[in-house]
Length: 317
Image (cartoon, rainbow, N blue to C red; front, side, top):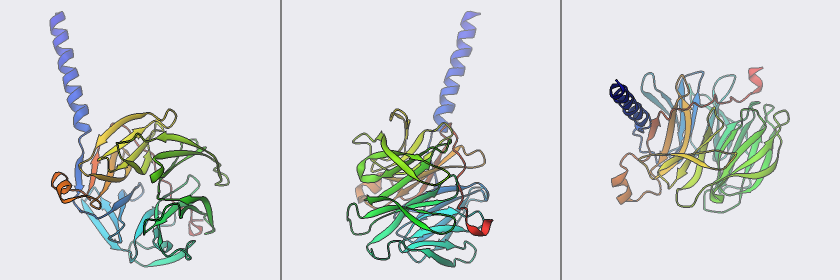
């Protein structure tokens, strides 16, 4: 009897282990071979993954229910996209922040805070819990510390929040709305700021995560319902999950592309991690190893994300 119970328990453990391993297998979703795929964000209202190809100047809307990926040409390099409460999206392009109509493809400039810096472009960004849009800039010619992080408020006023940024990347907020986490890639750090949701002000920067040498550089980022940070690792062929309280690397998910750029939890239960990658800075030899580099991948890591925030634009009032 004891032997039978032990055998049954052993079978259960093996089956559970196999099930867990299977859920962590990364699958190719879109074989787009994008030069610089980025900006993954799940629109829970439309049931679509929004993502971008920066160098291709393409905004994508992927519907997993139909398998259709809609491509829209933006006319400029695109750094990120966020949904608007009133419908449509905001896009941060090379030459400013625009309102963009996904139906017609028309766009309207809201503000260009760096019109005096023609060699800069916008990169990553997201909306905060009160619907303000945060997006940062970087040099297109390799200049360091010439970018900044900006905050666009619902009244369309623009505010420079962090100066002397090199490559502005991942940004997320804690569930209690008191902390903001932010990545300037070359620093190899995820910074934590005290965040005032009422005013949108940030203060008291501290290092939350020091990304270990040799595993890649921190790029785009999302947060799960447990408050852990999922960070795309450029050059590291992986997404790393970090505890922002201890700075510990909890888990690493291997991705079949050298340069992993962003990630976002999606699907109805926010339990699928969608991952964008880049073909850029990948040698011919590396492409033999990673033929689907530049594609979009997904994995079921066994945790869930949180809903993305929308831009609280005046038209939504």
